[in-house]
Length: 122
Image (cartoon, helix red, strand yellow):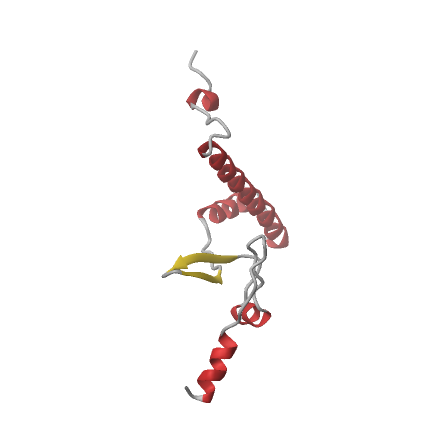
C-alpha cells in the first residue's frame, strides 16, 4: 500500500462509540466534508449502515403551499417566513399521522371508520 493510500485510509476511517441509547457522534471532519445539516438519510446496504446527506426534492406539498401563499399575496421575505411556518405545520401533521398509524397497528388505539370521519348517513 502506498503512503498516500495508507494516509487516505486513516483519514477516511474512524472508530466511534455507540451510546446506550444507540446514538453515535459523527466525526467533525466527516460532518464538514459532507456538508451535513440537521438531518441525514440512513439505510442498510450490503450489511452496512449508510449515512449520507439528505437531499430533498421539492415536495408536492411545497409547491401547493407556495401557490397558496402567492395567491394570498405574500412575496419576498414574508413569503419565505410564511412558507417556513406552513412547512413546519405539515411536517408536524405528518409526524402525528405516522404516530397514530403506529399506535393503531400496535393495537394501542382504535382506527376511525368512515362514519367517524364523515358522519353517518342517518
